[in-house]
Length: 63
Image (cartoon, rainbow, N blue to C red; front, side, top):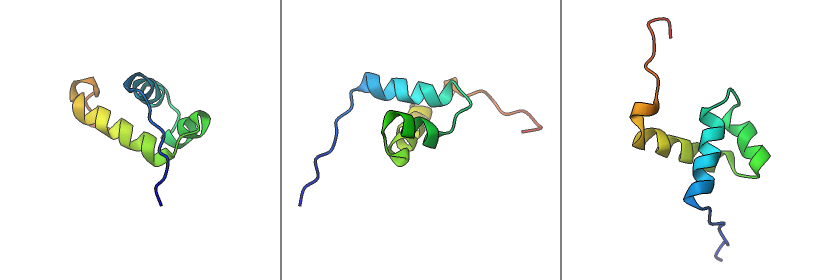
């Protein structure tokens, strides 16, 4: 049994990731809004962060 998997363009993935990173909303909420599995979006965010570590703000002592 093969499943038909949706293919998402890199541009779509980037926009979805930006929605998570640019706002205070959790991955699950953004995923629900876009009709995505939260795990899929979480993987995209993790992959983006791994490829772009310079985009992350350094943590402060209190964090």
